[in-house]
Image 1 (cartoon, rainbow, N blue to C red):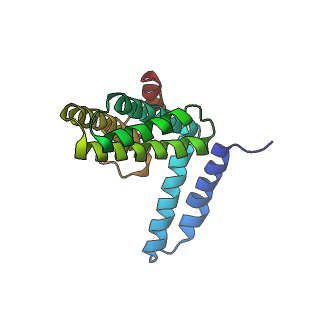
Image 2 (image 1 turned 135 degrees about the vertical axis):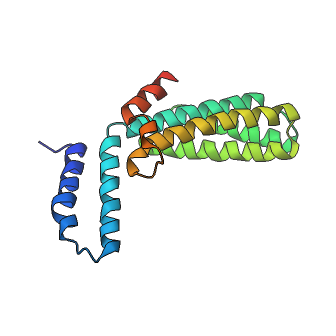
Image 3 (image 1 turned 90 degrees about the vertical axis):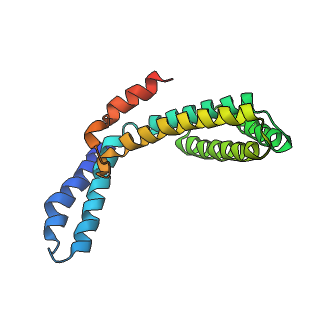
Length: 178
């Protein structure tokens, strides 16, 4: 039977902790540091492996919701109108993506189109739309930042890791926001 991704990652973690890291010379601080970073990434990957595809799908869902809200409310001059139309075209042609690669690509396309709409509206958007996009994008960015902090809390760079939910709890919260 083929080993699972979790089993393979666990095997690499064991190899790093029991063989490779102990064999490094204490004086080689850079090698020890890099080995520690690799070990940390392997541990984070092991924690994320069962959730990564769904996490990216939920990220796309949230990005689409932001994009749809902005497209539906975009008001302004020619630049805003063109950017809103472009965003709408991306939303229309990417409504049914399935593969992880397509999910990532569409998320990137939507993020770029949202940024272009905000840039255009900052030049000729109506005041009410500028106020709306500020509120909506800040709310979106705050939620995304909290999700990403929790998603990567296992890297050890989070100032207060105990304040972050586990990946399982994070995923439950993201699913509830569907």
